[in-house]
Image (cartoon, rainbow, N blue to C red; front, side):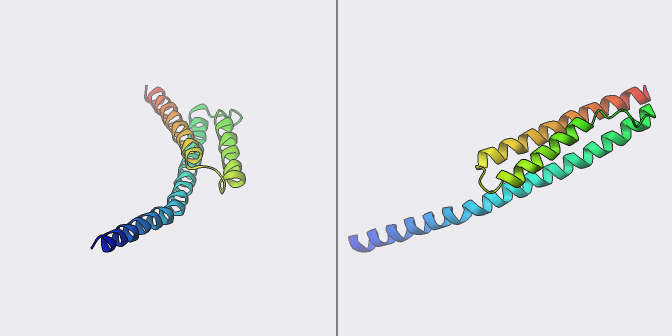
Length: 118
């Protein structure tokens, strides 16, 4: 009875370890996919912001969105170069930076909309 119980516990422990190891790559792939999705959403929002600013100012020589676009490119290049070896916390940090940048752009667009309706 005791041997069977020990054997059962060993099998359950091995199954739990195998399950947790198999979830690691899936979690990493999901983190990379979510980071790329967030980057795509930010890039689209930046393009909208640029168009909105140009519509309000009538001047396409002003490019307040340019630095944000360059930062987005830097993050994409970082992901290309380091994404396979980056830790999940590094991927999560980059994702948080992207989300924060998108929130700032949304706030600026909201201010522009209020000024236009003014």
